[in-house]
Structures are given as C-alpha cells and as structure tokens.
Length: 273
Length: 273
Image (cartoon, rainbow over all chains, first blue to last red; front, side):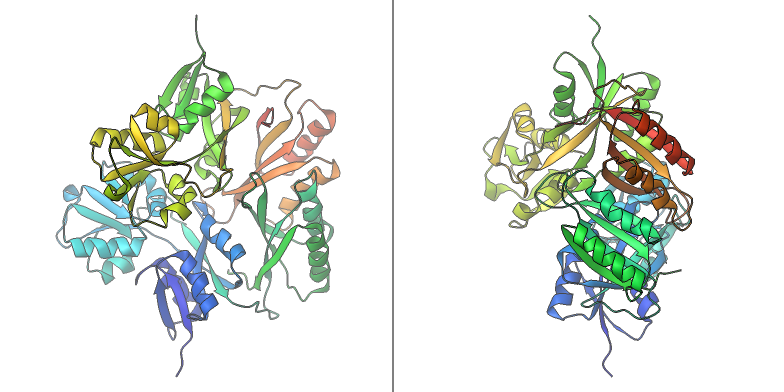
C-alpha cells in the first residue's frame, strides 16, 4: 500500500504534526522538515504530495513568513484545520519549579504564555519550536533547564509537566493550511483565498474591494504584507466565502484581477468549523 | 529652559533615538525605556510628553505589538517619521570575520539580513535590540561574538565594522509613529489612523469599508490583529488620507463608527514624505 506523503515543520510532537493527523487521519506517511520553506520546496520537488503549515494564531495573529511563502511558491491551499494550542511547562524527571533557571521554547509560545512567565525571573531562550525544545531538554538532562510545549511533547520526550495550560488565553488556537501543488475544487469548497497587489495610486485598493461589496461576497479576513523592494507597497491577502465555480464569484474574480497589478488565487477549500 | 521630554525604546544608538531626533530636532530631553509598553505607561504617568515607536518596516511588515498597544492605551498618533535602516556586522577592535562564532541582534535584524547570514554558519542569538547588542559585545570584549546594528551604534560602543549594509533590501526603512496623550490636529494634518472592529457577521467588514469608496477617501493601509479572547475576530487598523475637520471626512467617520462594534480615532497627522 502506498501511503500519501505529507510534510510538517518541526519534530515529532509538534503542533503541525497534530494538524496533519487531524486533517489526513493516521494512515499517512509523515515527513518532518526543518523550516517552513522546506514544505514549499518539498512540494515542488515532489518529495511530499501535501504539506501542513501554520498560518494564524488566534492570540498572536498572522504568521507572516507563511503568508510570504504561499505567494512566492507555486502551491495552493487545498484545506484548513484548527489545533487548540495549550502550553505546558516541563522539565526532566524529578525537576522542581525552584530548580529552573532557563526556559526553552518558540518565541510565539513565550508570547502566548506571557502573563504566566511574568511571575518568574527565568531566562527565556528562543528555540526552533516547542517540540524541539522538549527534545533538547531531554537530551541535556539538566534540572535547571525547562521547556514549554504540548502535553504530547512531554510524553514523547519523557518529561514531567510542572505547570499545565500556562497560555494566557484558554481559547488559544492555531489555524493550519494544507498545501498541495494544484487547486483542488469540489462543491464542498466554500472559502476562497487570493493574494493581490494594486497600482500605487489613489483609490486603487477600494476599487478592488468594491467587487466584494457589489456582489454581496462576504470578506472574512484581510492581511497586508510588504510587496518587495519598493517600500510601502503591499500584497493583500483576502479570504472570502464562495466557490469559484459559482457564476457571480467567477465574474467578480475576473473583474478584480483586471484591477490588480498582481492577482493569484491561492485556493478554494472547505472552511473549518 | 525646560526641554520637551520624549521617550524612545532601547539604549543610545537605537534606531528609535534617530527617529526621535529626526522629528523633534536635537533640543529635546530624551528618555530611553526598556520595552515598547513602557512608552505608553510613561505617557500615562506624565514621565514623558511624547514617545516614539516603530510601527512598520518596509521589508518585514507590521510591528504587531505596537499595533496592539496603541489600541490598548489612551494615547494618540500625532506624527510619523521614517528612518532608513542599514545593518552592519560589528565586532570588538581587532576582531576578524574568521573569529566570529556567535552573532547578537534583534530578530528583525536577522530577518532583514537573512540573505547575507545564510552564507555563514554563525549561531544567531536573539537579543533585545540592535544597540543593546552592540553594547553587550563591547562589554564582553570577546572576538568570537559579533553584533548587527547601525553605524552609529558601532561608533558609540567603539566597535569595528566588519561588513557594511548587510540588509538584503537596500531601501529598508522603518516607519516610526510619534505618540502623545491627546489628538493634535491642525490644517497640515493629511493622514488619519483609526482602529475598528465589526460585529462577527456576514458583510460587516465591507459595510464599513464602503464609506471610503462612497466618499472617495483614499485608503492607504489596512492591518488586521486578533481582537482578544474570541478566536478569529479582528481589530482592523486603517490609514487613509484626510483631515478630520473636513466635512466629508467627518460625516464618513460618524457613519463608520455607527457600523462598528469598537471604533477609535488613533490620530490625524502629517504624512511623512
């Protein structure tokens, strides 16, 4: 049996791996890569058929690197899923709170656990990701060093949880997108993502946005990113409801693309809920 | 003579200090604070009359923490200025390229110098800011440790520049906002910043945006940030051209605020150019 090859960023126990299993189930060949960009190059080279990347966290906002990557590479969003992110403080077996001097984790985990961490004077060391931080602590075997990550990472690397759910916001959720090489559209797809840039002149942006209003298309999200070498020009990433096979949507997209300097349909997929 | 007390984040030689002098000139009493948030609390307590904060970099985009702060605190944008950001690799006197093992700087400086840094295998250590990194290197007096920062920081901390202008983008610019306690509007003000959130229902966002289109108001920028404890609800930060004493603008703002859940005029000021 030939299993689907799907990539995620990080090591075993990463939230990306959980997102991957959420979406594809357990019968899948998972491939862990080091950086976000490796997902895109692995898709291009065919090493993986799909890849999973975090695009947005409900507390800390857009993951800008991923927005930039999906515009740069020839890949498409074919789905999305959500992972509830709870952070836990963990140390090697026998480690106590008063032993801790340094804490390793991804900067986003520090940010999401800021209120808790403000109560302590630990040195916070930014590290690749939460699962790799847990792995590092296990390998060091030093009671002075703790990590912040998921319960699964604690289990996997045989660490003790010293404090559970230390994230400030208990609805903390990360949205992951599923990337493939091609657009995949069926009748269940109800969310469209595009990236566009307009000429740098008065009114250019609202000329594009008016196509949403005029056609009663429900815009869900708009995100700006710098466009490249010219300061203060932007790529706008817009999510809205619809299916690209619908006549109204198709015509609106045609008109919009004519008003834009750069216009790319990133994907049409089923909204997670 | 009583000088204006103006705050910036960082230590002497920080880009924020340069922005401050750009805007206020040299005849000013500068106050360095540790964190972005300290600027807002110092304004509240009256320790400073104005504060300078970076809000956006032309290569790496919005500085989200600052967007969140200007919504949270009772402060207003009274001006803006731009600082051209060139990064330089620096070490203590006599340090050579082949001595370097670790490089200290702000994560944004690593990001902006990514192409250059990819040629080397140095350990990159995230630090508070570029000027503090230069100061740290000077204090350590170790040839194995280098920093990335401005030419001014190298001068100030008596460091040798080993490589100049290592940022990938040679138009790399940071936009700083000037914060005060109150709105300050005169006839020169031609840029307005607002923050708003809409009800979480179909079409709410474009109902607000249509007031720009209908009144021929030129939207310059839109930025989204998570709104708080409810996932996937956003605050939208919108910059547009105009003066709030203009009739059309005033009426559009009134209508917009009625369509919004939360609506705040952040400032009306003179656009930098």
